[in-house]
Image 1: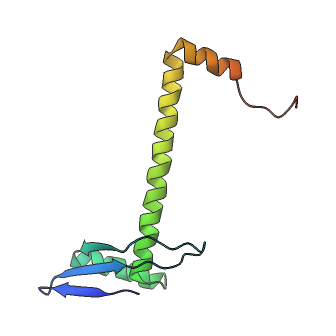
Image 2: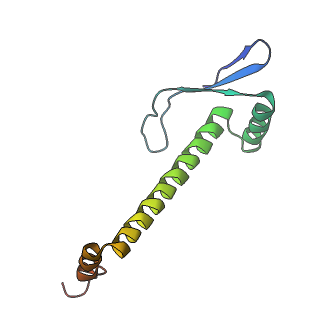
Length: 106
Protein backbone atom coordinates (compact mmCIF):
# COMPACT_ATOMS: atom_id res chain seq x y z
CA UNK A 1 0.00 0.00 0.00
CA UNK A 2 1.42 3.38 -0.94
CA UNK A 3 0.15 6.77 0.16
CA UNK A 4 1.47 10.10 -0.98
CA UNK A 5 0.94 13.50 0.62
CA UNK A 6 1.52 16.79 -1.11
CA UNK A 7 2.50 19.51 1.33
CA UNK A 8 2.36 23.11 0.04
CA UNK A 9 2.19 21.75 -3.50
CA UNK A 10 5.87 20.75 -3.57
CA UNK A 11 6.93 18.23 -0.93
CA UNK A 12 6.13 14.55 -1.42
CA UNK A 13 6.26 11.82 1.20
CA UNK A 14 6.50 8.14 0.34
CA UNK A 15 5.34 5.76 3.05
CA UNK A 16 6.76 2.27 3.06
CA UNK A 17 4.39 0.09 5.06
CA UNK A 18 5.10 -3.31 6.61
CA UNK A 19 4.21 -6.32 4.52
CA UNK A 20 5.19 -9.97 4.24
CA UNK A 21 8.33 -10.65 2.28
CA UNK A 22 9.00 -13.64 0.05
CA UNK A 23 10.71 -15.27 3.04
CA UNK A 24 7.50 -15.05 5.08
CA UNK A 25 8.82 -12.49 7.55
CA UNK A 26 7.14 -9.21 8.34
CA UNK A 27 9.07 -6.03 7.73
CA UNK A 28 9.51 -3.58 10.56
CA UNK A 29 7.82 -0.22 11.10
CA UNK A 30 7.05 2.18 8.23
CA UNK A 31 9.67 4.68 7.16
CA UNK A 32 8.81 8.11 5.82
CA UNK A 33 11.21 9.85 3.44
CA UNK A 34 11.01 13.24 1.77
CA UNK A 35 11.76 13.33 -1.97
CA UNK A 36 12.15 16.39 -4.13
CA UNK A 37 10.09 16.44 -7.32
CA UNK A 38 12.93 15.50 -9.69
CA UNK A 39 14.07 12.55 -7.60
CA UNK A 40 10.52 11.33 -7.14
CA UNK A 41 9.79 11.52 -10.89
CA UNK A 42 13.00 9.61 -11.66
CA UNK A 43 12.22 6.90 -9.10
CA UNK A 44 8.61 6.59 -10.21
CA UNK A 45 9.74 6.18 -13.82
CA UNK A 46 12.19 3.47 -12.76
CA UNK A 47 9.49 1.72 -10.72
CA UNK A 48 7.11 1.79 -13.70
CA UNK A 49 9.85 0.39 -15.95
CA UNK A 50 10.23 -2.53 -13.53
CA UNK A 51 6.45 -2.94 -13.16
CA UNK A 52 6.60 -2.41 -9.41
CA UNK A 53 5.40 0.30 -7.05
CA UNK A 54 7.53 3.13 -5.75
CA UNK A 55 7.56 1.69 -2.22
CA UNK A 56 8.79 -1.66 -3.53
CA UNK A 57 11.56 0.03 -5.49
CA UNK A 58 12.61 2.02 -2.43
CA UNK A 59 12.70 -1.17 -0.32
CA UNK A 60 14.85 -2.87 -2.95
CA UNK A 61 17.25 0.07 -3.12
CA UNK A 62 17.49 0.25 0.69
CA UNK A 63 18.01 -3.52 1.04
CA UNK A 64 20.82 -3.51 -1.55
CA UNK A 65 22.49 -0.53 0.13
CA UNK A 66 22.29 -2.33 3.49
CA UNK A 67 23.86 -5.49 1.98
CA UNK A 68 26.68 -3.44 0.45
CA UNK A 69 27.30 -1.60 3.73
CA UNK A 70 27.42 -4.90 5.62
CA UNK A 71 29.86 -6.44 3.11
CA UNK A 72 32.05 -3.35 3.28
CA UNK A 73 32.11 -3.47 7.08
CA UNK A 74 33.02 -7.19 7.04
CA UNK A 75 35.85 -6.55 4.55
CA UNK A 76 37.19 -3.67 6.67
CA UNK A 77 37.04 -5.76 9.85
CA UNK A 78 38.76 -8.68 8.12
CA UNK A 79 41.52 -6.35 6.91
CA UNK A 80 41.91 -4.98 10.45
CA UNK A 81 42.31 -8.52 11.81
CA UNK A 82 44.90 -9.26 9.13
CA UNK A 83 46.85 -6.11 10.02
CA UNK A 84 46.68 -6.99 13.71
CA UNK A 85 48.00 -10.49 13.05
CA UNK A 86 50.79 -9.12 10.85
CA UNK A 87 51.84 -6.58 13.51
CA UNK A 88 51.45 -8.74 16.63
CA UNK A 89 53.93 -11.62 17.07
CA UNK A 90 51.67 -13.51 19.49
CA UNK A 91 48.69 -13.27 17.14
CA UNK A 92 50.89 -14.27 14.21
CA UNK A 93 52.12 -17.34 16.11
CA UNK A 94 48.52 -18.28 16.96
CA UNK A 95 47.42 -17.96 13.32
CA UNK A 96 50.42 -19.97 12.08
CA UNK A 97 49.78 -22.69 14.68
CA UNK A 98 46.15 -23.12 13.69
CA UNK A 99 46.82 -22.54 10.01
CA UNK A 100 44.21 -23.02 7.33
CA UNK A 101 41.34 -25.35 8.24
CA UNK A 102 41.42 -28.64 6.35
CA UNK A 103 39.13 -31.60 6.05
CA UNK A 104 41.78 -34.29 5.63
CA UNK A 105 42.96 -36.23 8.65
CA UNK A 106 39.59 -36.59 10.34
